[in-house]
Length: 225
Image (cartoon, rainbow, N blue to C red; front, side, top):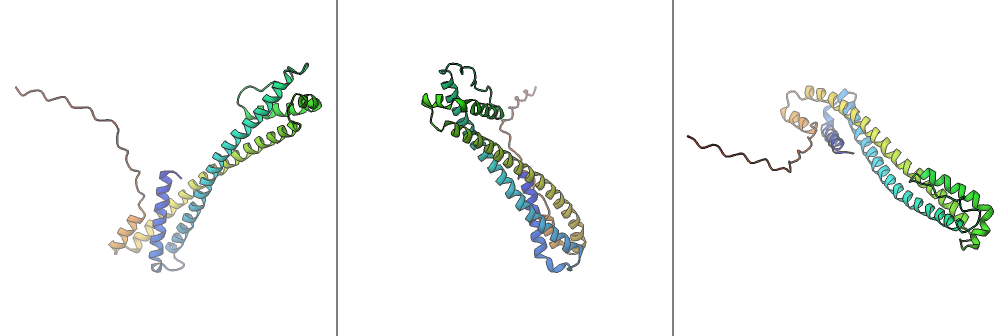
C-alpha cells in the first residue's frame, strides 16, 4: 500500500480500537455496534489485501529475474545452433537468429530451430553439439514460457490486490463517516470521549517535504536619504 492508503489503514485500526474500548456502550443490535463490526472486518480485509499485494509484487520481481535467465539460456541455445549451421553446407540461411528483444519471437524461432534441426541432428552432433542438444532446446523453450506465465501471474495478483485495497478503503471511509454521526450523538455530553473519537477518526496528513533549494538572498535595502 502507498502512504495515503497506509494512513487510512492506521485510522481504521484506531477506530476499531475505539469501538472495542467502548463496546459496552452500544447495544448488541444497534447501528453503532454493527458499524464497529464492519470496520473490524474492513481492517482484516485490508491486512489480507496488503499481504497479497506484497506477495504479488515479490512474485513479479522474481518472475522478471527468472525470465531474464531463461531468455539468456534459450538465446545461447540458438546461437550455438546458428554458429554450427553456418559450417554445414545448405543450412547457412536456415537457422537465422531473431532480431530484437521480443520473447515471443525468440520462442517462435526456437521452435522452428527445433523442428528444422531434428532431421539434421546427427550433423550437429558431429560438430560437437551435445547429443541431447534438442532436448536442452525444448526444455529451455518451456522454461521461458513458464517464466513469462509466472511473471504475468505475479503482476496480475499485485494489480488485483491494489484494486481490492481501493475498494475496501472506500467502504472504510464511508463506514467511518456513518460512525461519526452515531458517536457524536452518543457522546454529545461527554467531551473527553468525543476528543478521543476525534483523535481516532482523524487521518494524518502526509508530511511536507522540505525544499532543498535555498531561498534567494534579498537585496540590501537602499540607504535612507
